[in-house]
Amino acid sequence: MADRAIGAPDKKRQTTTIADEFMKTRDKILLSSLELFNERGERNVTTNHIAAHLAISPGNLYYHFRNKSDIIYEIFLEYEKLVDFYLDIPQDRALTLDDLTFYLESVFDGLWSYRFFHRDLEYLLDTDPRLRKDYREFTNRCLSSIQEIFWKLTEAGIIELTSEDLRAAVSLNVWLVVTNWMAFLKTAHAGDEPASLTITELKQGIYQVLTMQMPYLTPEYRDRVVALRERYRPSLPAAGGAPVKVVARKERVG
Amino acid sequence: MADRAIGAPDKKRQTTTIADEFMKTRDKILLSSLELFNERGERNVTTNHIAAHLAISPGNLYYHFRNKSDIIYEIFLEYEKLVDFYLDIPQDRALTLDDLTFYLESVFDGLWSYRFFHRDLEYLLDTDPRLRKDYREFTNRCLSSIQEIFWKLTEAGIIELTSEDLRAAVSLNVWLVVTNWMAFLKTAHAGDEPASLTITELKQGIYQVLTMQMPYLTPEYRDRVVALRERYRPSLPAAGGAPVKVVARKERVG
DNA sequence: GACTACCTAGAGTATATACTCTAATAATAC
DNA sequence: GTATTATTAGAGTATATACTCTAGGTAGTC
Image 1 (cartoon, chains in turn blue, purple, green, yellow):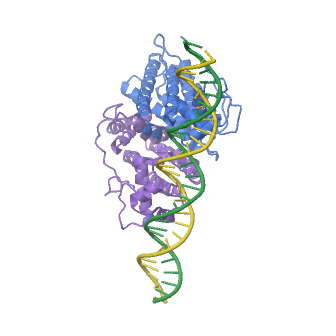
Image 2 (cartoon, protein in one colour):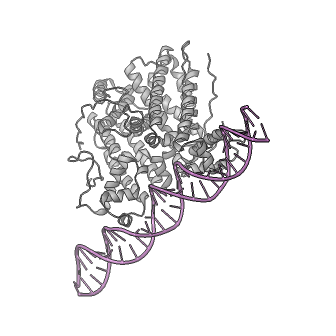
């Protein structure tokens, strides 16, 4: 995963797929919209911009989508699908530390790919009841998954979170930290550039998430999780800092 | 501290102050802007709306403020002042549980009074370098304060967070939860209405913050903090729910 | 009264934005 | 081939938004 700051004038993108002439117009619109939204923020991207970016006419765009909300909604559905896939929990075996790593890495990958979404979330939900309803269900699903993961990590003897109440509250905190970490980086970041952010920095949010789990680690796993957490430690505590080594993605077992 | 932030809750006022004819136009503009921003979101409030709301002309508004950004910036300065005031840390005595309660209540009061701010934060910072710089410093100041509070709570024997590293990481998580709690409520809330939210619900975020501190409580204080936390427990875990009893605001000592 | 500094009204403007309409072209079916 | 459907271009529109400009009022001071 290449480390590229958003907003950089980089024609040959590595993290995202460039729309090419073999794609259907509809898909090109979705892809370009996502790219532009991520780079400039939904508020700063008009349907005319999207059409111009693709060198198609506004009429063409509106042939494929009724309005801007529809484009955003379809992108959300993709995001939802991705996260649901990532958060899948194996029912036939215990969870491992590799699973935990995978969950964390994946969720932040998803956040990165659709990073525009959480930025203007409230406005988007205010203007599209459909999205509002779906997002609410999505959130609840995510929270349930996190709780279940904590439960299975407890079963696996990795953490100890037996009280359901506490598990729910901790899960919610995890969700809050995960979904707010990017906004924090963008706003509190040391750099003066309005919107420079790398996926490596984003993944330092994993450090924060693991911080929350530390008190609940079992003695058997404590050292290993602490070591895992260390891999994501921000190089410069409160000033952004240089990229750390990116941990290798583990394939799911089972 | 004689300065009172506009719209900030004080003894007599409930949530907002209505602009009256005895105020200076400039202050009326700031107050109305804050009210409208909080109610409808900055994105949905134009300078023409603000002027119309006050029954003054756009020209009048622009006589007092160069542009919309200036209005927002001035409101931010008030917000900043308020939070800085709330987060003041007594250097001549140890912290008490009442202090902790005060900090939590106050911070959420501030969030409520200026709740529009965090909603469109990224856009606002993108479009105003001045605000961007000030907000960054503000964030760092808040983080420092939280860390110092945790340190003094440790000194006071209420919590045990002696590792500076850990204290910094936990403080950051507290900040993330505090600043994201409102967005969570608004987006994941059970109600179908786009923007219903009460300060009582908002303050249930205190439950989440105290959840994070629980593992670090000393045995001497554990029960008391757990009881405090219980006062903020959401009535219906993941579905919003009825208001809980609002805890009385304690005056600062010293 | 006259001077001055401050304040206000309200019409007006340049630009942007989401979206529409019509006509033409390409693709596909028969 | 022809008929039909899917796709596209591109000019155009209604509305909104941030902001300007000019002319005039008001309050205080001498």
